[in-house]
Amino acid sequence: MSVAKVIEVSASSKTSMEDAVKSGLRKVSETVKGIQGAWVNEIKVATDGDGNVLEWRVNMRVTFIVQ
Image (cartoon, rainbow, N blue to C red; front, side):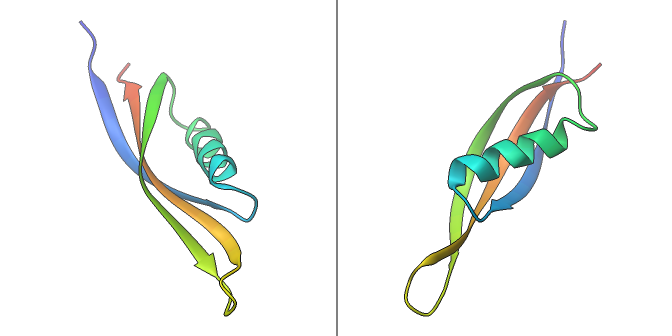
């Protein structure tokens, strides 16, 4: 029998949404082992006055197996 746990994480990147997800997962993996996947449940952007994207922001739920 295995038990999974879900944590919510926020991450950001000036490059892309994909980079925000990857950097968030990389950071979580420093302290959490057995990551099974992530569900990106919110995407936001910070913009300048002209509507140019300055930063991508994601909120995601990360699932991992409890040891």
